[in-house]
Image 1 (cartoon, one colour):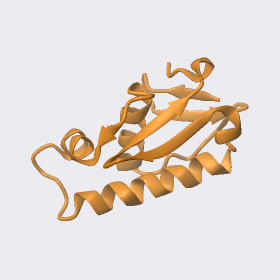
Image 2: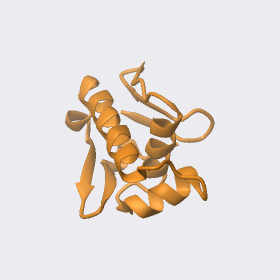
Image 3: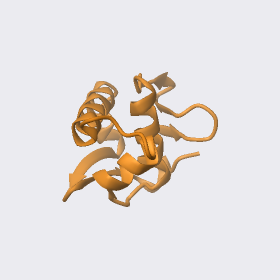
Image 4: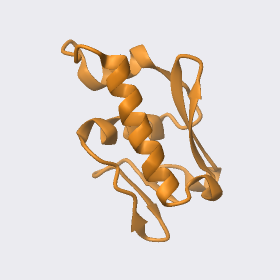
Length: 103
């Protein structure tokens, strides 16, 4: 599986792109991919995605985005390929095998 964060944010399995969805999902995925193996709290994601202008319910917006990202990753069987999006405490982490390091 390929994770790309330079240029367009992408996740590909066997050359087939996973539809990462809207801007918010792509930004969250990119942040998690750049920080693979590190948990990013919901508060940190809120600050990084929206800065000083978050939506009324940022935690909910992030939960929805992560749910959509998980569906995308499931569709390309990412877990079998060594990529998992996990809930860790009050945040999220993207785990990936070393061979799947983002480019």
